[in-house]
Structure formats: structure tokens, C-alpha cells
Length: 439
Image 1 (cartoon, rainbow, N blue to C red):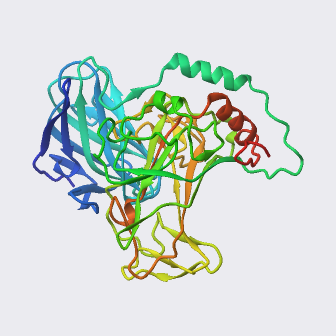
Image 2 (cartoon, helix red, strand yellow):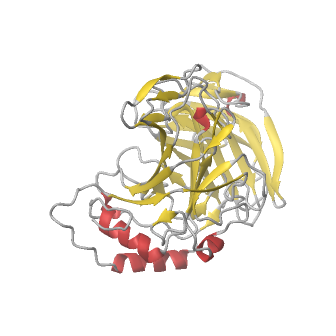
């Protein structure tokens, strides 16, 4: 079946040298196999849904701008399966513009943005086809919108390139490290950690809103005590005060502040685990200096009743005893505490320290390996955050809104040698280590 519709584009200028065109996925001029549904988060509109192998959409008069660098992105969601979105010009089999890889994002309405840089492309208004490919049976992705950001010959907006010379030097140092001998009684789990306490709160976000103090909702910071809106990789390395053990982890970590009846409840403990979810973790390498990423979605405002993904839970004797009146928060026994675990992507593109949405340079492994557009296995970071409260029937709020908006930020500033030795000893050798990096 082929259905006609009107094209809707939004023009903007995210930077002085960049022009952007956003094309809503539901505004195709023709399609095959595409359904539409409402997007759950605020202002999300509709999305092209139930997309499977061979489905396609056609968009007319998409302005790809002038010659030079072009960043092509798609906002996607997926509960199962993986595949790719081929963007072609002119026809279904026309010249390939870009390929955007897809993988599970945690749910059909759990949205992330996937992007690709294009150096050579047709210019001006073009007919663009989005062609879906997957070896997964059935539906594998939903698409909310596409964007095309042309920036001439300058760097693509929001992408931060890794310094390849420094990165190669760090890798050389890492590969030359001699792994410590693993004792016979070691627990064979690829893992080490940093044990942290709450440091401070500010309405700042040096990843999302760098250089703009007060531009964010309130965040609770742990790790480097200097973290604020002006934080850079250099400032983190220069400020050696940290709320984490070991002291050689000068990284910054933060989450939205939790409120109970309008009063902030700060974490009484955070463990940042570095591990691997790959069957073979031996290819894992450390993070480059200045690497950053975000897990979760601050804009998600959907109910999270018992059984929903991304849940807060109760840890300790007695566990969960009930739910809040709205069903979105657990009530814990007096001997238990409210806890959340936030898991970050574990595959990297090997090219960028950051991306426009702070997610498109990384991906979650969906098949037990890192490959394709994300070939580099990095440590799987997770925050386990404990709050000194059992909760009440009133529930809680986050500074970012509902429970579903929980998210976390990681800005790497480990000492290279300290991080590299832990990856070599603990993750590569599949041996559980403590905060000191020993077995």
C-alpha cells in the first residue's frame, strides 16, 4: 500500500555556520509498510511505527544544503531487534546518502538519536528515501524524525572529535601494561568500581549546557567536587578533590535531584561500576580522556508502575512493601532504602568524545559484541544510587519530572594509568576487583 501525505519541515540555525532541516517521519510523501502512532513524550507528535525489513518512506524537497559536511540523524526507539536505516536520494536504489544503525533502546517509546557524518552529498532540495533493513523477524524500530544539519566545511555541530594522536598514545600505554596475577580464589566477574558519596548540587550541566550556569534543572553531583557549568576535561584533571575512592578517579558524575514532599533527598552512597556485558570482554579498552555520555532521557514523562523498565527499587531487609498512590514509586520497609541502577552504553564509535545528543557516539550491545558503526568495546558503566529514605504514599519527584526521566551523566577524568591498569587486570581478565583495583 502506498499512501500520500504532506511534507512538514522545520528550519533552524543551531550555530552560525550550520543550517538544519528537520523532517517529521509521519510527513512522508509516500510509504510502504509504515504505521503511525502517537509518541509518548511531551511534544513528540506522531512517529512512524511497526517498521520491518523492506519498509520505506519517501520525503520530497528535503534541502541538504551546500556542499561540505552534513550530519544526518534520526530519532529512533526499539524494544527488540536491530538493523539499519538506509537514506538514499532519487529512488529506493539511488545513491546512498547515509546509513544509521539501530539497536534496542529499552522500549518502543524510549527514544535516542542516531547520527552519521557525511562528507560528500547532493546539494539543495532532494527526494530522500528511508529504506529499512533488518535480519530480525518482524518490527524492529520506530522513527520520530530525521534531521539534516549542513555546516559547510566546518566541524559538525555538537560532535567532538577524539585527538587520534593522544588516543593512540593512551592505547599504546594500555597495551604495554602487564596484567596482575589473578589469585585462585578470585570471583570471575569482569568488574571494578569507584565508591562515591554525594558532593554538591547545582542547576548546571557541563555536558548539555556548557558555560551556562543555572540553565539546567537541579543536579546532584558526585565525584569531582569542582564540577559546574564551566567544567572541562582540563579543569577536572586540574582539580584533585573528589568524593570518590580511588582518588585517581577525578571524573564527574551527576543525576537529577530527587525530592520528597518538596525537600531534596541526596544520595547517601553511589557505586560506579565499570564492567563488561560482553561474553568475551578481552577486547575492552579504557575511555579516552574527556570522553562523556548520557544514559536515560530527561524528557521522558510517562508512568512507571511496577514491572516497567527503568524502575527505582528497594534494597535491604524487608524490600518493597507497596507502591505510591500514583503507582510510579516503591514504598520500602523501614530497614530498606530507595535505590536506582542506571546503565550506560558499552560500545563506542572510536571517533568522537561527544555527539550532539551525547548518545550518538555510543550504543548498547544487542548481540554480545561491538561492531559496525560502534566497533570499540568500552567498560559498561552503571550507577547504583542509594537514597536514605523509605518513601511514602505521596511518592517522589525528580528535578527533571517523573520517575521515567531519571538519567545520568559521565565525564571521564580518570588518571590514564590507573584506569588502564584496572581495565587490564579486572575486565580483560574477568576478575572482580574492589575500589582499590585489587582482587
